[in-house]
Length: 589
Ligand SMILES: Nc1ncnc2c1ncn2[C@@H]1O[C@H](COP(=O)(O)OP(=O)(O)O)[C@@H](O)[C@H]1O
Ligand SMILES: [Mg+2]
Image 1 (spheres, rainbow, N blue to C red):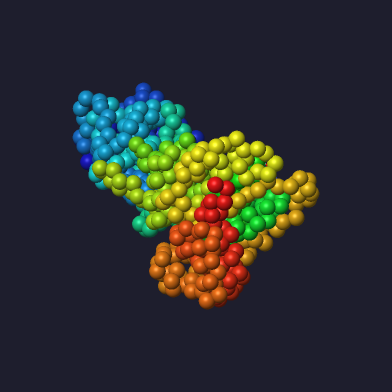
Image 2 (spheres, rainbow, N blue to C red):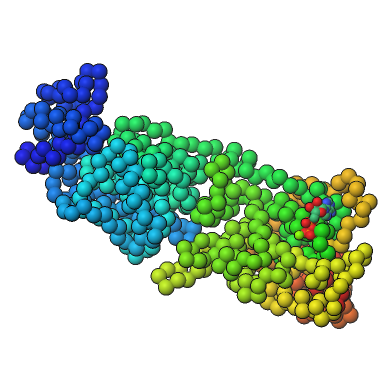
């Protein structure tokens, strides 16, 4: 790579670093060569040509050595650079190698390796960003390969690695540092960087792969820095990234205090004592949270169903850091993380509207994205106006409710999103809503009521353990001061009950709470004495409870006993659980 092959053209990339000792335009002799650094197009072309002409021949070898250190093939016909980037499949990341190959020929720019629309468009952004950052865009045949080629790459996060790859291939970026770093970021036309989605899974993968760190947009730094053991280098522009990689701009790795972030992020804005009265509904929700039981709330409009449901995440057991990380990963992939809230440390509450599509609810779509069930992972999925949801939408809920995850299969790939949530449904007792309201007249016919109720029957109802009626609150209670317990007090009891359950199921995989029990487990863990058995028989026969109610009542009784710290299920636990089967009793039909 020495001597004659270093033509005039090659020197077009060489300019002289400005310094008081060596002002532009005064390069000669070996001493001045120490100031040479290969930065393309920073000075105007004319002046760099002038330097080149005036660099003595004996300095050529110096420049060559300089270039060799940077592993650049510049000056030859073939120029190739390899950059690590990353893409996310489901909520797990994998490394993508961005190869930039530049050869002489008619100017062109093509991207191969199953890129999607946004990646294909990236060449327009990359071209503009390189030019607007003051570099000369190589007018040659540029081929970008994204490997492995069999996995579809989506999104704009490949902009920065592609731009850096091109600049590395023509010798403007040292590839030394690139060997240990993943580069991510969307470019704007002026060379600035925009945040990208799914940075947390990438950071986790970078750590698992034993790489040194990530170069990424400033806004994503907090999210990536949550992961211990990697260096996070935030940059704001393409130029900054190039300077950093060339060792010309030292950057301190970005750090966050994860414990503090977790602590600050784990506070809720609402509390259970906001809700006045409704003590028996609160108790039912406490039981639901303690055992992970799905609930449906039935009552006239304005009785506080939404208000109550919104407060259930605040009484669910304290989130662990692992849970927070997994939930954050999903929100990161969906692009829902706000820059100042790098860690989702509160249990999510998702309340999709009843017009949602099945893809919106369980995930998928043309560019696969986690659905509401996954965004509610480790939290609450609230379906208000349950009977208004389309039947096919409610149908697709069955699989995630059973498996605690969603698998989306396409011809080319299949991916999995976790989806372990507590379902809370809310509904009116009839289409007009006032059937059970003692103060208002209901205008529905019995047939209308029956048709309305039948919309939620069947498989979905099978997975809901607790049905509870929410009556209107009396004026006296509404006008008084809040008297109920705060969420923290309730949560302490729930934490205790959950610990008992974790111990009970410690030998079982994927089983953490009573709601997960199958028929066989119910026989093992929910044994009742003769008195309890008599009570249950009476309830089933006299109250007309359906057969499906039997197992549910046993499960819920187990949770009520756990809340009390009782080893055995007693008759009073069973009688409380029987009250939570309003829909089975069909009281208002
Ligand atoms: N028990 C209650 N304590 C305090 N405010 C209540 C209560 N019930 C209802 N409200 C008030 O009524 C509003 C409407 O309640 P909401 O939860 O939307 O009812 P629903 O979902 O049953 O139609 C709430 O925002 C709240 O201000
Ligand atoms: Mg409501």
